[in-house]
Image 1 (tube, rainbow, N blue to C red):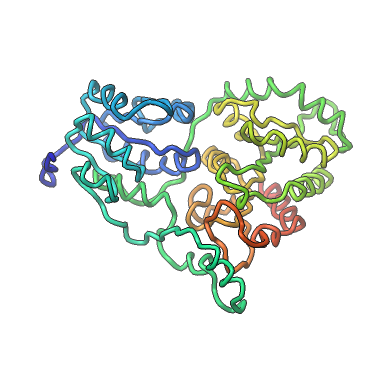
Image 2 (cartoon, rainbow, N blue to C red; image 1 turned 90 degrees about the horizontal axis):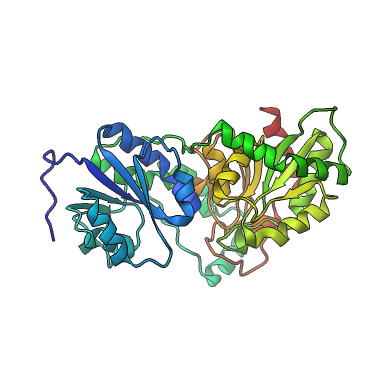
Length: 393
């Protein structure tokens, strides 16, 4: 193994950042990339990412280049391409052994990442858990059932988390970037979209928005007045434990539309969310335009930027919207807003709704009991949160 250079003697010039593989996690790495660019303005920084996330990084000011790999591409194939770029430093953001193997096979002299079984020996510099790190263990079924039998006075994990410092996941990536001299203080996650892309997205869906308005029972706006666009993201790829019920989304969309007047809801998500969004559109008297699975990632970004807010579960588009400056109203159940909430922790533009359920967050994909952490968040509470957020614009 190549020994790391002595402190203060190494000045990286060609840096590879091995990116993470999930959309929401990728957005949460942007503060670390911004701090890395601040610390090393003359360095050439390349991000290695899966093809599915490549469009996320277009025109990002923290990067000089983006390299992609396909889902089926082997680490050896990736490493051969990396070797040709002659990187002197690799910052490995994921905890996966594959990520460490790629940069080891590429013979990058300095390889930095968190210490993990099966990958530490592939790195030249490993970091232990950062100060303030809060683990996210998945609760067992027995633990969930035990917790719901406890008296209500017993605090839940969610209630204890805000007392800890720097618990949010963005600090994990900032801590890694600090090994190269970056400032570990957090910044708001940031993504870039152009005015031209926003115009194209608006023009592409304007006619369909008008059709939605004519088919719905919503009150019409003034002649020539563009309706306010509101985003709705009812899916969650991680699993059903993160998904608020479809009928609740529909109830909120109906009530908000009656209060706001001239507005239209854009339901977004992946191809697997089409039926879910179709059902919500049906339940809202066709006051929702179903775009699930119909947009590219750049088109989704443009539409989220156009929206006055996004009503969403804890999932990737939530992070994208916040990083584009769009306020979000989020329903949290099995996950923790303190650990993976949108934007910069404490940003008052975003409203993070939870329930006082002792077993939450459990970090499970499916609920082993009665889904009380999400069903306890009532639609009338969410309507108030959405209307409050709209009043701030």
